[in-house]
Image (tube, rainbow, N blue to C red):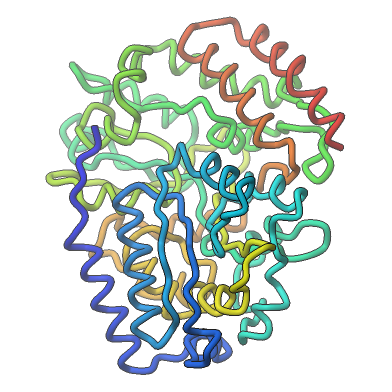
Length: 430
């Protein structure tokens, strides 16, 4: 299991944040000072639910501490494990006990908007001094639904390849270079597969497969804005998936039993796999793993550069009695000081341009040294559909792709099953 040691790095982030507050460092367009103002509404206690494992939760505790230390009101943080977050959130809304603020991925928020559970945040953040042009546009677009900015994104992460620098050196494999191809990636995985070590771990989720499909010239659905059917059976998408199936069949990935026994993150931490693909979310835990030396590289290309947006945003519950205080906290969290705290903790690729290009994020003396890779991917980012039925469609795709990857079920059979289960949902949802 993952080892839980996260004190030193997060404590350092909190110290820096305290220094920012003491120096009165202003946020973009003055937003931080407005967010932390001392009026009665600013001191109203709010609840804040965040999907976070312990290492990530420590980053957000530092954020809350910095906010409260800057004169902000009381915040009660509710950390929930990744697997339980949506269930806990849905239950809280159903029982009338929803958190004032919650953090959610763009792939998952549309059902809450459809149910009227989210208060559109755009006007409230404008009142608190937020200037939209200070932020990357890609995540803002992903969190704009029915014409309104529903939630405020904290990050603009992308999918990257995490690689173990010690294992690469021991195997005599050259470090990944910008623009590397899928063939080079597969060759490296084969060379790194020695003894108990596998070259790469492959997650069967569509968020991992989508950028490979796009790189090969394929699509995941017929229309990202208004999807009515899946398109994994079409030539570009199928060819990309076949490349993954072939890599798995080569023996360069963990077995089904190894996957069931331990997650890819833990296998990477303990040196059982040399590479895996994920977003920035892994960094806090990886930094705290004793003896692990790692870096990140861009995704291998199957034709044209492509990556997939990974972004979470702060949302305000429509029924919250503390909307003004919630908006002030969020304005702080996405402002200069708040995003500096979460960037220093390693959790985010800041959505605020000035922090994303600052030493708080890019500093090469903290792993991963090649954080610029995340920013280099921005021009090639695409996102999966934002529609209320998408979480269910995504689950169907993941379950079926797992059959192809781990159980060796023929790819065409799996794709056919995806079409039969997912296409009616998309057609109905559209």
